[in-house]
Image (cartoon, rainbow, N blue to C red; front, side):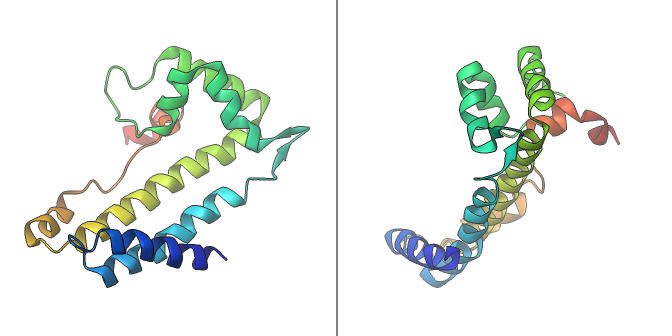
Length: 159
């Protein structure tokens, strides 16, 4: 099913961008990455932590602190002064204590989204018709860090 969606959406998106992108390469990139993106969401849709459905976790975080919600979803840069506001670290830890299953799932989803985004972006850059744009693929970062990697599990980044 995801493969069908990937093919349908990917083909449509790439057709609309065919002036700048090689259609076949763009479509292959979409077909490779869109199903992964869909799958990353579906496995947690019905997951529960006690009586709490993990699908509720996003709304809970958003309603508690919209600034932190945004921080959780954006890549974090180690060593930047505003990377880890204490209110966001405290919120994550509080929710991790209350809903460890859901927060662990969310953490995995966020990391997976970054990996899929990086892969898709690089493939799309390489499918661009302009050789100058394609040459920029080597300048892409090789990793993106999640809020939890930088602010909660930061010891792993100090190596």
